[in-house]
Amino acid sequence: MQGRSTGKQIVIVGLGNPGRAYSLHRHNAGFHVVDELAAQENGSWSRNREKTIICGIEIESQRVILAKPQTYMNLSGKAVAPLLQRENADPSRLVVVHDDLDIALGRIRIKVGGGDGGHKGIRSIADSLRFRDFIRVRLGIGRPPEGVPAEEFVLTVFSPDEQPTARALITAGAQAVRLIVASGVEEARNTVHSGRLTQESAK
Image 1 (spheres, rainbow, N blue to C red):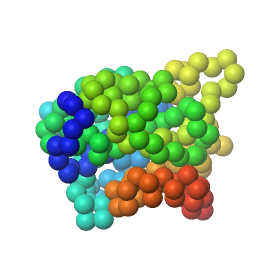
Image 2: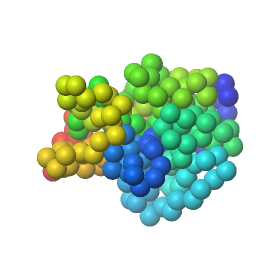
Image 3: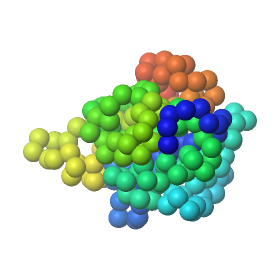
């Protein structure tokens, strides 16, 4: 699938690993954000043929598709590429929500394109689409303690002390996605990077 304009459908993908054993891990923060968006709009999830759970909702009168790949993180692109093709969606309007080790816990950053920063889910999507300039909502989960490998740290749960910040992160992540859909990437980025969303969500 090449990075060319094909349609106006907005697809919002939350990244994570399927199954109850993984559900509370830091690596599943992207799943939690799209779950929050679905809950806010009373949306219901269904499984499609592309190994993905999807939910259609409206944000600011725009229909969007929420998606949770069920392929496990490292093969996320195997679910995302056929979903975009079936929906005739422009990959430049794809929004991918994911955890990020390089951002402090509770902080959010938005970017378009660039490298994958070692995130294998992002790498898989970029490789499968043969296109990197999709929108990323990066959820800060903090750095691992000294001596703890990154691949182990992302599969840990938030500590009791971290739980309030983690909950605020998910709420702010959902607000960030709403801003992208309603106002575009630049305005959303300005609001998010100012810290206003995370400050409001922590109240």
